[in-house]
Structure formats: C-alpha cells, structure tokens
Amino acid sequence: MGEMSEVGRLVLLGAPLGNPADASARFREMLATADVIAAEDTRRLSRLARDLDVTVPGRIVSYFEGNEERRTPELVEVLAAGYTIALVTDGGMPSVSDPGYRLVRAAIDAGIPVTAAPGPSAVTTALALSGLPCDRFCFEGFLPRTPAARRSRLRALAAEERTLVLFEAPHRIAGALADLAAAFGPDRPAALCRELTKTYEEVVRRPLGELAEWAAAGDPRGEITLVVAGAPPVAAARPDDETLRAEVAEREAAGLSRRDAITEVAAAYGLRRREVYAVVHS
Image (cartoon, rainbow, N blue to C red; front, side, top):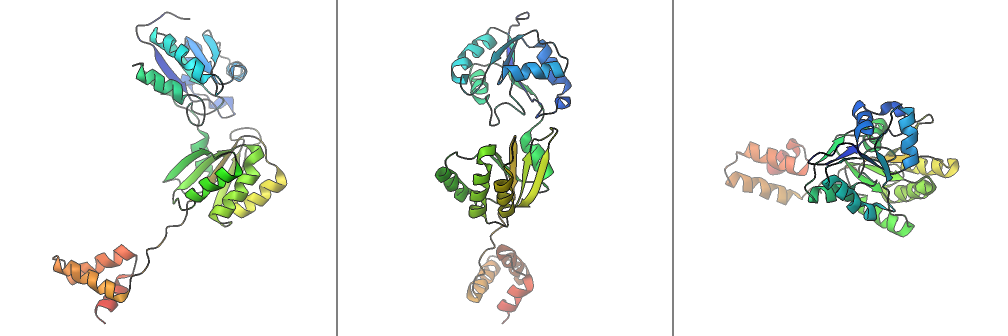
C-alpha cells in the first residue's frame, strides 16, 4: 500500500460497459493511485487495466455478491486506517444492481468520506438510445426470477406512467417479455438494448408483443437493458352535468368570476371550456 493519510476515502469508479475507450481520465488515475482496488471480477479488472495501459500498484481484492457481506468490515478497517479504496464493478456504477451499496453504507456510518469518479451507465445509455420519453423515468433493476413473482411485480407496475428501465438475464428475457406484453399490453412501445458500446451492440425498438416474439425466436445473448414506455395517463371520468354546475357555482360562491370558475372546472376534468360553459348556461 501507499503512504497512509489521516483519513481514508472510498471512491466509486464508473467502469466502461464494454468499450475500454469510455474509461475516464479519473478512472485511469484512480486505478494507478488507489491503495486498494475492490473489484467485482479481478480478472476482468486486470484485462481492463492492460487495455488501458495502466499499471495498478495497489492491492487488488475481490468484492462480489458472494463475499461482500464478509469483506465489507475488512475494507472499512482499511479505510479507517487512512487508505484509499477504489471500488469497481464489471461495468457501470457500483451499487446500481451491482455490489457496492453495503460498503458505501458502512463507510458512511463509520464517518469515512465517499466520493465517485462518475462514468458510463447502462441505465441512462439505454434510455437515451431507446427513442422513448426520457424526462421522467424509473429504474426497476432485475425483475424477480420466478415467473409467479415476476408477474405479480409487473401487475403492480402496469399503471406506472414513467418510462421504465429494467435489467434482465438472456436466459430469462423471452419469458420476461411475454409477461410484460401480457401485463402492459402487446402494443406498449419498448426497446431492447443489447451489448451496449460493444462490437455487437444492438437496439431493437418494437411493441412488447413483437419484442416477445423476436426474443423467443432469436435467443438474444449478452448484457440486456430493457426500456418500456410508461402507461398512458388515465383521463378523469367526466362528471354529470349537475356536478359540473354545482362545482362552478361553488367556485363562484368562493369569489371567482363565472368565467374563471368555468375555466378551473374544465381544467380539473380535462374538458374543453366551451363544454362546461354550455352545461352551465343550458
């Protein structure tokens, strides 16, 4: 390890999704200067360092789903001793459906500074490439593995109006798409993004029903990110004429002009102003 400082720090490294050229200058710098590199896959990290022509003088340790509970206290001790640890996963930002959250939480609880060298993200990359609305979205990570639990979760998400971003394993993608089409409807727009930034990158933009057929016939491989359009907003039910008149009258009684009262009621129910006007004056 390098020279110990008074306060250690944990640095989260945004790793390339596939193309090494996407590694930032800070990513390279941290690989070359951190005292310890905690890597999801130490062999993959070594290959990436060779591709980047970066020498890693620090100690490399494995940190993955199978050992993170045991290894987290060990790494916190290293941080508390004043050393810098860089955390890197196989691609994208640590903690986002990857190891990292447990170590981040433990470091924060121990009063150790946590920072990041931001980098590529499969979530935002797929979202941008999908051609679907990006102004509001939600990330669901991996769906439950068993069909029954997956279908239950999708039923709960069917009315979500924001664009939805999911990760899925290749061997489950056909089943997941079939369940998505059943829960959301076969015409819901979607995009399947495969092997982002890699040689065989592919983005397939089709309605869910067609995507399910495509996946079942083609057996897509590699890292998959799925983007699904949100549910269309549910229009408020039109109240009867008596209710519209009563609501306009209530607003007038509260001090609004009839014109403003009609405008407000029309907006509340998604109606045209002239429609409410006609009812009030009939």
